[in-house]
Structure formats: structure tokens, C-alpha cells
Amino acid sequence: MQTPDHAFHVVDNEITIDFDVPLAASGADEVLTELLSHHALEIIRDRKDRGQPLEGIPVARISAGRGERKAEIAVLDLDQPDSPIEIDLPELVPVRLSAGYDLLARYGESTGGESVPLAERRADELPPVSEEVRLTAGLAAGLRSLGVDPETMSMTDLATGLLQLTGYTLNSRDNGSYMAIGHGATTLVSVVAHEPGEHPELAEAAVDSFLIAKASARADRGLLLTDKYGPYMIYRKERADSDVLFVVRERLQAFVDAIAVS
Image (cartoon, rainbow, N blue to C red):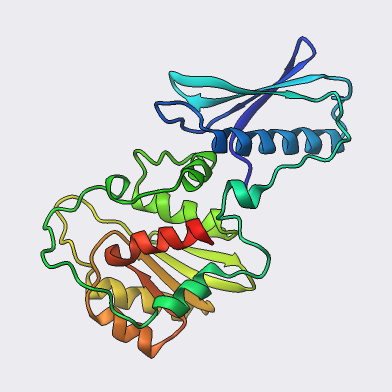
């Protein structure tokens, strides 16, 4: 997981690390506190390895937040700097997948090519994804550690954040797409975010553009994520090509849940 943006200072024989991550109104929960504490220890180790004279400093104070919502969340005892740091990240954030586990391939195996029940009545106006998608505490903390606020996140924030948490490196491309690199494959990722006033169903033109982009990029796989409803054609496309996957509104919560329990 990438290290969140932060400020690092040494004042009065104490290290202070201030992480630029959003906090919930209730402050940092146990999961986020342990995640950022882990990041802080890795930052200190890295700076020591690069020659910064930090030996003998006994305390690191960790704070987090943005704007007026800032708080000190932990004080770390550094008296034994050579002791192993026992923080079990797979338990704290279940989305830290083990080596060789490819979430996209596994999820595609379980859903690709199969239609999901369509909503009996599709709303013309879609609520923001931040109001619709349920997140576990671990996922919410992981997103916050990337600078994404679950309370105000966009579809793009959610999609790119989840992929980063599952071990993918994202390289930006044109038109809201990314090349995701990880788990031994390249995946062309397209994020189609619903905007107020737009038609609530994914346009067939967007599907065709995505498939053309995947082919031209010569990516191993293609993944389109959207908070719009899915047209029936996506299931035909998945049956025709097992290397493409559409995570539409009907599938979005299941996709998030699959990450949370992986």
C-alpha cells in the first residue's frame, strides 16, 4: 500500500508525523490508527536507512486529518528501534491480498457472463456512490489512508482506491482510464462515473469504446467500473470475451464485499 502524504519533523527530540488523510466525525478508529502507525514506523525506518540521524529519539507522535478536523492519534515508543514490528496487516485490512491472489480474476470467475437481477424499478436520479455503497471498517480505513474520504468519495475515488488497496499500480491514461499493473497481468481499467442529470444506464457507446481501448492497449484484461446501471449487452460481451469484466451498479456492492472478505 502506498504511503499517504505526510509532513515529517523532528522537534525537541521527538518525531512528529502528520498524515494528510480524512478523518470521520468520530475521529480515527482502531483500524486507521494501526494502519497509520504502521506507515509511520516504515517512514522512520526508510529515513534511517537513507542516513537521517534519528537514532536515540524515543518518541514519535502521529497525527492525522484535514482542515479543522485534525487530531493526534498515536504516540509510538521508539526506545527499541531494532525490535521487529508485529502488525498483522492482513487482519487489520483484509484487502491486503496475499501474493498470487488475483481478485479480478477470482471475481470474474464467479460473476463474469452471468446476469444479475435487474432492479424492478430503476431510479432516474441516482444517489451519490458515497451514500449507496457500504464499507467495512477496514476498507474505510484503507481508503482514508489513501486520502479518500468515504463520506464524500466519487466513483473514481472508490474505484481507484479499491484497486490500489488490492495491490495494483495504476498509471493514468486518457478519458478516465488507467493501466493497472499487478498480479502478473496488465488490466485496462475504465471508470464511468454517473453525473447528475445523465441517463442512469451505461451507454452502449461507452461499452464499445472501452472494448476498443482494451484491444488497442493490448492489455491482458479489461475492467469497467461504473455507478450506472448495466445494459444487458454487457453480459453478452463477457460471455464472448472472458478477459473483460463490467462492474455496474447492480454488481458494485458485491465487488466491494468481495474485496472486504478476500
